[in-house]
Amino acid sequence: MWQNKHPFNRIDFETKRTLLNSLYCMIEDLPLTIISVGIDKKFIRSHYPDWNVFNAAWTFITERFDNFIEAHLETGRKGMMIIDKNSKMPDKQVATIVNLEE
Image (cartoon, rainbow, N blue to C red; front, side, top):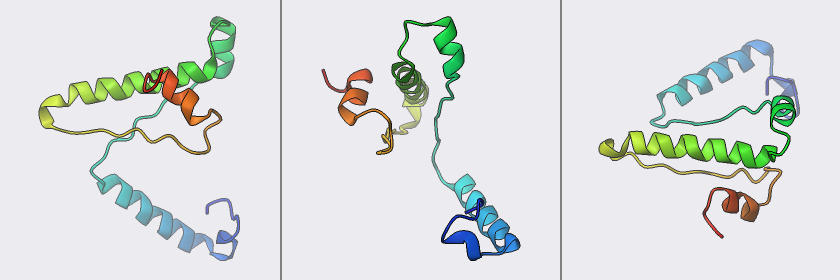
């Protein structure tokens, strides 16, 4: 939307700003926690040349997710991991990394 790509290229700046502000306010009020990781591929490749960058990323995100769930066991909060279909790795390979399948 912000980058004027179709179909949002006909919406004026002020309307876009209002819509996005409303969206951000709504997201802030949702009863959820989003966990993500950022990977410096260049750093990992130079310092840990034997590591598979995508395996490392999935390992890190899974560990953070597990830590969050463990820290909130007494509250009864539950969790869900959604694998984006645009992931560069097939679902089966991701599932193997996070120990869902063998």
